Image (cartoon, rainbow, N blue to C red; front, side, top):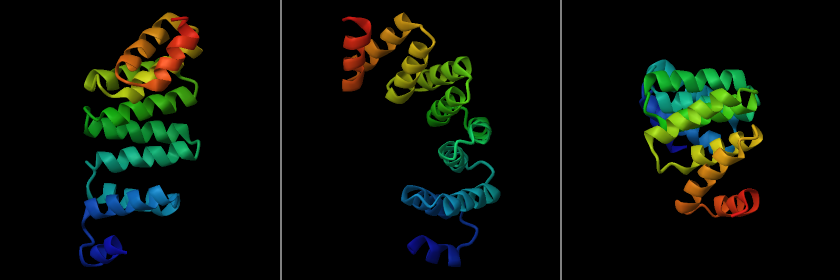
Length: 160
């Protein structure tokens, strides 16, 4: 309600549209979230967080082609947005491009080597490709970073 009221007085606030879109997104009201993210992007084509979140919605809808495009646009606006690389990797993995997914996860890790999500995501894709040695290396790193799940996978999959 507060954001809607604010937008009534400030209809050119891309940040308010993004925030309201995020609220709708968290409530699971994807159509309204998508509309607000789209408006934020119309007002500010550099709104990479809105582009990223549109990609998340497309991913939830299993529209991985559109998700990948949205994440790619977010990355073109902000090439240091680790979340967009990780999210695009997830979309690529889901659409049958494991090599592209691994490249994106690796880029996300290069941006922030303390970001656990792409490390775990890459380990799963490597494991699915039969590259257990590489997956075990990722689980070992994630385990050292405090991931309990990685500790379990390392113990069970890697015989450590």
